[in-house]
Image (tube, rainbow, N blue to C red):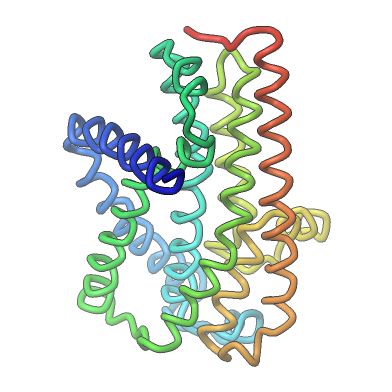
Length: 273
């Protein structure tokens, strides 16, 4: 019965999120165009820097000679990860603006149900966008993506998901304290983008930034996914092992951080706007 009730609560939150999404009809179009703009920018940057789309230097650093394929795989991880980070944070912010957060937190549903319900629509749309992007990239940019390696890469993405969920929970906990979370969210998203390895190899960063990037769940997911697509699971054993550890660590850290943050917030009262 408890599982059925949680699923019912999950779908209820998701339905509310879907109604909000439908009230902003241009979001769907803008999200699709964002992926195309990213791919187009990646292609132009690659050609602008190397004079051609394929780079021997990139192949030596990453195993990828096609900069566009390199960037598209990175964007897939980045977009998926930011769904949790931004979705969890803004689910708290929106409730604060509406003055309904206390009512939501007082409900018997689990916190993870509340947060996942708020991003479930975005996750479904990400899957839909993937079905749109891949054929378009193949058609417009002659992008070559083999099905079996790509599916193996998706398995790696799922392995990194608990870590990205955990970081989203931790960020949502921080927002409970902030009167104006906008700057915090913007800085955090820019930091994640810069250290995700989506647009360039981590090896070109200064070593302290490489360490910081590898201490977050995004870059290890991106690098391991790319390696699995090129070399298979057997060629990425160390990356998979490290990603498993850091993903579980962030899942635990995020849970503990959010629970502590909510407990402290309840002592002083949840903020509203």
